[in-house]
Length: 273
Image: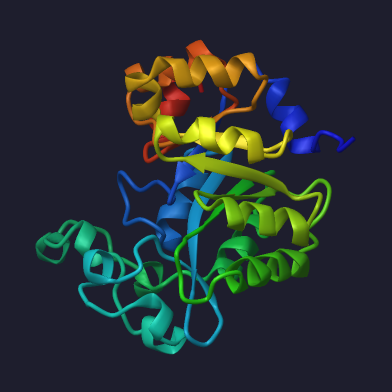
């Protein structure tokens, strides 16, 4: 029988859910930038969530979309560009396009808006002065297939975070990706993300007994039976993306152990700090 991961035991012993910053403190700061994650840490986020994609030259970078039109104003694909090419782009101006006209705005470090590699994010967490969890989502489909998970596990291994007691957990909507991570790193915690409530009856027979399940908060609101079934089955539940008091209450009513939010400071305030 697989033992319960230490991180999971710690979460289950809590009276309130763990607050995880979704792409950093992304309500206030451009998502997936170093500035967004530093802000999340400064406000007290207990975990950081990121999406990872593989560049053409084999680097894992924290980017959600497959193309860069939304966050870097270019139609380029992450998977066809080298890290050096991505490093030339601005990943933060889209969030506040008029900030350059504000004479009272604080000076911004240009490096804060550059593409963020997973390695840099891991180094930031490793050097921080308190324990911080990482929830790392691998994006699929991708031309690189399972290479994404292999590179991810290798990178975590460089920090000694691919075994028991790791602060990292790996998430995906892809059943194949979650299965692959568990095969590559049997003691690494995994989260199977669920996009639609009606997918769960299909996924349930093949989901590992100790896998965390990650439904969206809107699905839980629209389909209350999903949450009831997960609770009845004794599943640990991590919910995305929780940004309002009403959404948080849905999670509290179900006893979920982690909420992933664009607004970590607000969630911590609602939970009493």
